[in-house]
Length: 277
Image (spheres, rainbow, N blue to C red):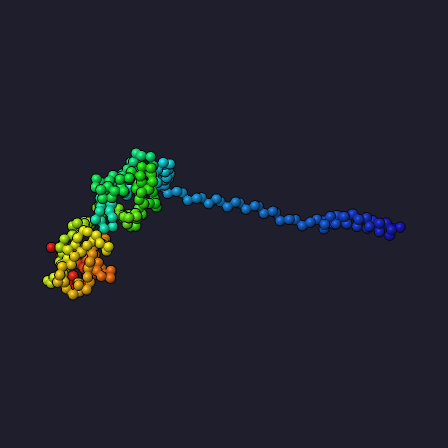
């Protein structure tokens, strides 16, 4: 009986201690404290504008007026100074002036002023009522209805040219940049002597009457053999040079070196010259 009582009391002790031990051993391990979230990175400050910019901010670009004329810079370059209008030989030329005021006729562009002798030398200019010019476009002479009569393109700064049937190439250039024009055919007409050094090679009479090859030329007797072989029969003025036309369409060209003295080109050591008598 005593032994049985002891066994029962021991079993009771085990039953009492077991649940407590189980609770202690089953408890999960303590967790490490959660990390605090990182503080946000400080904002990077934008560099301050320069003091000058803060005090004097750039003004906005001015608006271009809706009715601003096209090609204003190109037009401005044509104003003020007179321009020479001429043919290729410049034996016909006159002065024109350009203005930015309206021509006063519908479609006639801006005002153009022609010298009194222009129409006499170039009759077709009588129909010109105005002019127009836009950037990257032709400079045009127009009639009262705005129809183009001449269209000039700028081939180099300050030099315009326009083709016209039966007239060839016509030119516009500032008067201030020009050399004196070459003599006219009337001024070139007359008796000439061809010389080399002190020797006279031949004499010619240049006339203003026309021939199939140009203007009439008469050779005086007793010419040098080289001149006789060349056999000149006509003459013309070409780009400011005197040109003698010989047999087989050969040509001798002369440029003016002094008033009434012309020298054959290209130049040689013992040049041939034409001298007006």
